Length: 383
Image (cartoon, rainbow, N blue to C red):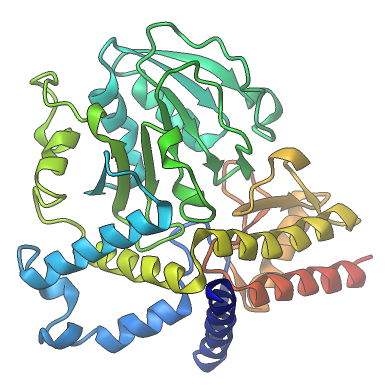
């Protein structure tokens, strides 16, 4: 009965999203981040905008030290812990700076031996790799650069360094559209994962990782916030005294993410999204919805004579789908046509070109179906 109720709730929420989209004449936003948010959540935010639950003010106006905002943070953390089944020996931190700040915070906090192993599968893991090299001996143990990051390399038997403090991956590459279907064999070393563009898109076993982090602006909220899930034994206070105070995980953990004024608005919105996902049925339900959106899109690409995906089938992302036509000129024509038809932000990243549809949790299936139909029509007219 509980499962049936979740299904019914999910259907009602999606119907509400479609009605919202029509009422406000919203485009289907396929941006990679900042990206679309669940429309029922936007309605809740709208209704609370001038006066949050009788406080007489907007969340952006209230003190982060107030009881009202503390309840927002506490509920957000509790809901996230429930969604991900986060073990009690893991801390949840809300830190400003987005995911990019974590490229430096991770090596500064986790390296005891000054050694770490990185797997580079795209733009974001490469940026993290290059940043980490400023702080220690960073080994590149696997890479897919040889084929323009169009696949995930074999990670079953990597040359893991005996003295490595951790092994790092970007689990879903936003720009290149690849994702790990199987986690690397770290041979007992701590696994660190950037889950920014796949966060809360499917169930995850948190215990497989020493640290998970995600920039909020792709799947759960506004830009400017990173969510860190870190095992308690990795939070050290015996760090080099030269490491800035703000870049120490123990400072944020000890202060309950309130060392300084946090990104209050982003935390509030993320908390709304967490509750929305719970109403939808949790991460199992969300994963099924994401499969129902992505698989038809890939099926269209595999059968199209004009469009083709750029990622090998076994490593395709459910969140970010890059694709191309026969030429950059035709790519640009498609982007212009889709924008005119109400589909926005389909231009591929400047580093790779082509097109890209980011179909995060909040992208309704109706938006994906409509885009597929439009691309089919475009292809038929240009055959």
